[in-house]
Image (cartoon, rainbow, N blue to C red; front, side, top):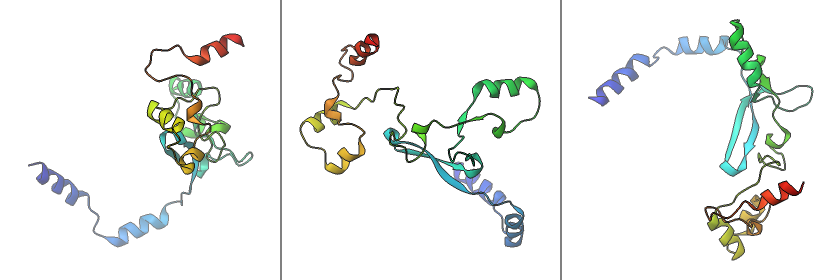
Length: 156
């Protein structure tokens, strides 16, 4: 029964007339994209329309200014994403040395990664991908140990 529904939806929404598609494509404004952000830890990149690239600084505006967004929603006026975009932090921009990791945050490696790094079982290629050597992580995830960075924060 489900396949019948899928086939019916597919056939109803299928465009058969190439001339219609070509005329719509010709009338559409071309859209270009670029790789805006990276989050290496998650193996993700953000591909954004280049209209979100700041022409003055070369940076990107892919973050959301939530205060401005709520202000616009509450105003009742029409608005677009361009009205509430925020500058992407330098560390999140694709190509940054931080590779999407906020320098104010601590990177936590999986226990298996820490163990394999300490045993020398990670290849040079893999080790080159990390910002720091996972073997240097003092805290074991899930161990119940106190956060080793808390002492550093309190000392500041």
